[in-house]
Image (cartoon, rainbow, N blue to C red; front, side, top):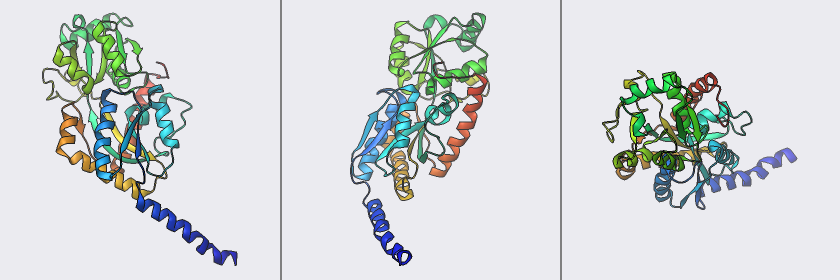
Length: 321
């Protein structure tokens, strides 16, 4: 009797679940951004939130939750209810680097998230005080190589996107410099302009205004070729052939979010990236829109996890480095 009753008992629950999915979204969606306001990550979150909100018919509210190179925010995103009302920016540091340098991380980038879609890739720019820029990048490399562990560089924090980009550059060039981590790109840039640090790497959204104002000098970009927004800045690959290190940003949902909801979020994401206004807003900041299928984004995360794991192990990266 109990066995015969089970389908009848399960039917209302299944119907309720289906109804809930059909009714989604039922309230505002929270978009967790794992960095402070300002910088490339925040830009991605706010541009996408506006377009997604218009597409889905509910507000998409950006919540900046900074700290520990995005670990805190990403752990919170992984633990959120998988009902489609919490999504997060996933990026190179949180999904491809942190798993290799934080031994007690409370999330697995492949197991604990449902990839929604890649938003864009963003080049980084190596900035320096004018006194260090004579002779271009080759001259800078020669000076640092002659005086290891004396020249300082700032980043948005240990394990941040730009920190990893700088580690990749130092690894490729065979250099040793002194890392000065900050809580976000904005305070690092302020100290660089003030002369409190000698160099720094940051994404194009923060770098381009400084270059246009002539407040610092660009030694090179991490893109494989020069950027249209700053064509006078060489690609680092012109001095170190084959070098490339791009920040990337996508949207993820907690694992076990219903596939139908993930599919709707994916469609809304790619629709946003097809909008001329969204593409223009991203590209004027140096970002390269890169819409892909959710499956392709998942494969990309896996390949990046492998790639940056090699760098992290070779350089023995640890929290606080």
